[in-house]
Length: 208
Image (spheres, rainbow, N blue to C red):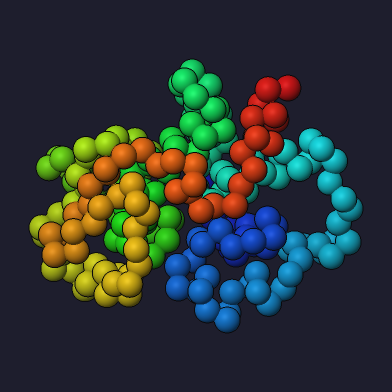
């Protein structure tokens, strides 16, 4: 599957904000977004004002990169959101938040979404007692996401859980730190999603 393999900090600089793709580095004074407030590349400091289409396209790209989703996947999620009752933009964000890799990150069992994606692929997590190694797996209310018993002994997870000890999961997730498992208590509401995105621009883009 195609996947971006270049320096991910360039993506944050291109969007002009932190997408939290590098874990600890995003919170340190080494973050390139804090040090260089302009897009990457030779002409990064001389970019012109975006058109209406350009703004819509940038919002889509920013959201795609934030959640680590390919273009074809993102289009599929938009079509799913359109078919669901309710506001299409909110439905789209709910679907993206419901991805297993995002939930693992939100629960504090990974330092970033890219890391969560890799850990899920390596089979470290279960959903309702069954191993799931598909990062795009969509969880639903009532699902229990747990770190496998054998994986709890790994130094990697001990370090991650210690580093994220103070992280508070969103209210639609409940995390049992002793059992190292989280429960999806509900679908996220729009106010639960802290990512600064104007989803109506994405809807307008795909509605052309």
